[in-house]
Image 1 (cartoon, rainbow, N blue to C red):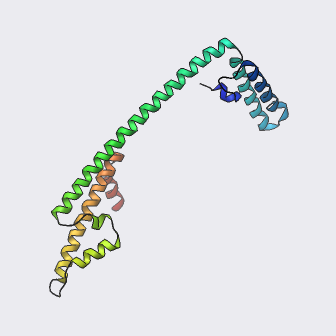
Image 2: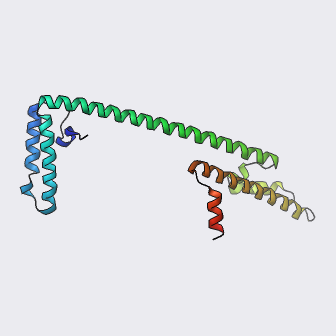
Image 3: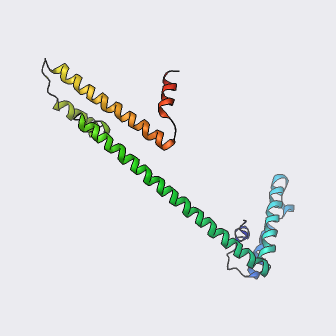
Length: 186
C-alpha cells in the first residue's frame, strides 16, 4: 500500500488546507513541462503519484477509509517483524546451544589427551612458548617428548577441524566433508 502522506510529504495530522497548499507546491515544482526527455517521464510519474495521493487525502471520506486500511497494514507489518524477530532469537538460541555442545566436546577431548584447549584455540605465541618450555628435553627423550607433543597437538587440531566442519554443516545445512573431499581430490 502506498504511503500517500509520504508522497505528499505531509504529516498525518495535516488538515485539508495544508494538504492542498503542499500539493500545489509539489505539482508546480514537478510539472512535466519543466523537464525534458527522461526527466520529463519521471516528472510525469511523480505528478501522477501526487494526483493520486491528493485525490485520496483531500476527500474526507476516502481519507478516513485510507487511514484505517493504512493503520491495519502497519499493524500487520509490525506483527510480521515481531514474528521474524522471534524466529531470529530462536535460531540464535539454537546456535548458542550447538556451540556450547561443541565446546564441551572439545573440553572432553582436551582433558582425555591432557592438553589445555587454550594452547591451540587461543593460538597466541606466548601460550605456545609456555607449552614448549613445560616439555623437558634431554638428548634421549627430546624426540620422544616432541613427537608425543606434536601427535597430541595434531589430534587436537584434527578434532577441532572435524568439529568445525560439523558446526558449519549444521548451520549451513550442507555436507562440508563432501565439499572438502571433492575440492581436495579434484
